[in-house]
Image (tube, rainbow, N blue to C red; front, side, top):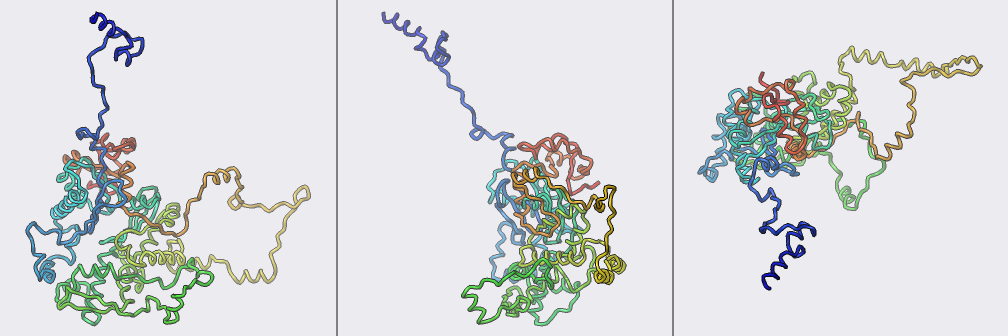
Length: 583
């Protein structure tokens, strides 16, 4: 009875687990127990090639003085490296702790240009050791990646944000360092002016980069570089002018030496070190306002609001303009022998900026093309652009670079450009004949006054066939445009705002690094993407000209990891983008 009851119970369909899972009408016999399948989460599995591709790439902005690193999508870089001689010390070098180490900077700087230890490279590549540039770059990259970004040794995709006028030998050394010593699978190249415009939220702009070696003015139209101009009036010349100002204060009399004699005097006992000159230039320099204000800067209507404490201060003393403020500023200099504290009037602290970036004492015809003042360079850059590009770019002027943080410099450049536009307009022709032609083309005021005294000129309107007065004929270009009420209603519903163009306007940007981080996070294809295997086989000699590469295969990939698949479809032809090629 027990055996029969057990068999009867096992044969019931509603008692078996298999019938419950398969359905009430299933009569299949129960099978062996099995563990249900579970989806495998990629985060708990072993890392594969696909997971490496989906990792956040590392964005690197490379300059001659600083290096910025961080992950794609971050609002700010994780690490900002400033190159200096102290970072090039070997392990076990404890000379920095010696008591007289700071006073021995002359012996360490002898045989090299003044301040050369604070630069990664120089634009003059004659006699420069590119192997030393690679070693400096590798050391700073390795220290930043493993100590501050906390990444492992797995290969990661690298995105480089570079200035567009970087020489090809320096670009080749940078790519050799990344491919050989960090095993990056791909390197994507992005242009600094384009990324500065992208970080400002605009597609077109005129980017003024006040850098270290030179100041570059780049016109960007629809995320493409139209043309670049440059001048040597930049941060390096500003620090040298600051050195001359401090040396005059130490000696107590003006300096009348030539440019060739200045370099020899920078290692004397009374000379000042590069670090102190740069600190004074960063902290204390300021820029004057232009001699005449632009016409659009009209005085404010009404009287300004004054508070009680401001009224009391005005009663005690009147406000002094900055250019007439001769109050002494004390600066302690420890690098000269002996250490000395000098006092410089506040108004003289604006002279280095005036001499470096503007040089208003000389005529514009006395400058070479590579040493134009910054405001003239910006004006001529706008003048050489096509009409439609100029109308867009002049309303989106972006100032970036280290020298753009000097107090009042950006406003001064903008005001000087506005004055140039008011005085000269957009006519590229200059000279006496051009001015005389303009004067002759203007209406004669005497004839106009004579007509005004004799009354208005009568207009005779002949009647038409019906006896009615016919309207005078008008040109089609001068006819007023008819109002489209439907289009106006659609624009009002969509909150349409017309494009700002034709007006001088300056906008702010988050910087080239932030633009590169945002572009990498959105998987926007780069100007050029270089594969490691192709670079190891061909090197920089394998780069083709940008016009010889078919870009259709690169634009088909806009999904995840689009930056890597852009060149994968055509590995035999690759390019360096805006940086050109050797052949």
